[in-house]
Amino acid sequence: MPWVDEDKCVGCRICIDRCPVNAIKMENGKAVIDMKKCIRCKKCHWLCPRKAIKHDSEKSDKK
Image 1 (tube, one colour):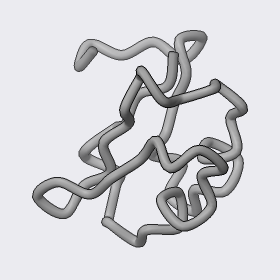
Image 2: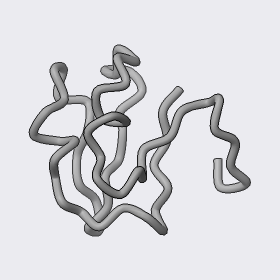
Image 3: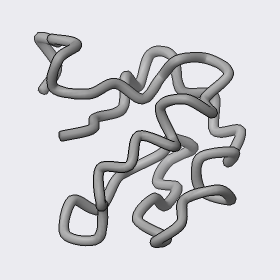
């Protein structure tokens, strides 16, 4: 499952613009992933210039 590291997200919207299923939106200047829409393609992860979008394999205390 993808998740957003809010400390790294700068709200650039690249992930939102490139998500093939429109599963990402902006809330309070940060990306938010809709898990019901997400197809786990990892496109957002690879495109994020700040590496703010992580996946389950990248652990976080913020989950």
